[in-house]
Length: 321
Image (cartoon, rainbow, N blue to C red; front, side, top):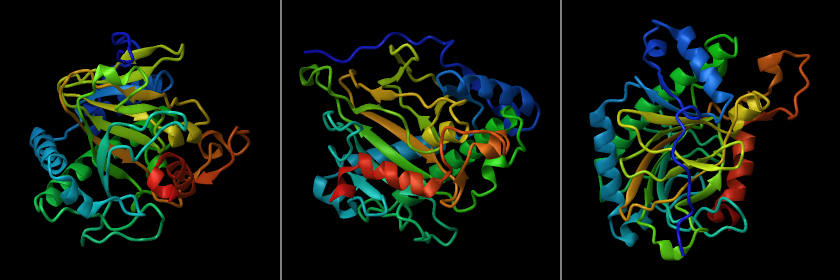
């Protein structure tokens, strides 16, 4: 028995881009051009200059480990809700019907208003569930969400500029976003489980864009256009972002949403901080708005909210009960 293997990172395939000049306005066009080029390749990008304080990342990781190291009955007090908020235990997600269940477990939360309340106007939006046994977790998690969400909004501005659109094109309906964040825990993975066992199996991300903060353990693998798998190891000081399915659909495939997976061969536990960026549920995903009304798209227009409900229903066992 053995692990699924991958080749070493090719820096030409996953570039490192400093988004600082986009954030501060000193060179938005240059950063936008670099983001545009990378999004037409594998659609995976390391970013520096993201502005998330180290202290916010450290605090989020400490809270996440405090949660995942708790007793199962404690974590079950915030078992994932019908609104996709809370703890999703090991085996709760399967990316392909014929695959083994993923080894990961997750804690999921999302946007909430300034008063701490969350509108319940969509099947994937409702109250966040916070563990009573870890009272500091809410403040830490929401602080990280706001930081990562700010990064996502900056990147969406860059993508718009790269496509020759108004800077706010992707943000016009993003005041009450469907964005979700998650702490994702991967236990040490034994080679005895075989090369068809994954922390998370091969998949593309459902929404518009993912912002990932890896730890130093590594394990992320990305599939090239030729079908090879390459490592996407952590690079100190960077986040890794990737185009997800809705942005690929919005650009009619000009931007690529690429399969990826996690194989934790380290013998250590692994933790990721994830922000899945999505705009308001009623946002229409229509490539004609990007390329012009005469453009003939390969996809029918669909709202962000309807698309996500369909994809979540396929991937998560608890939504099939």
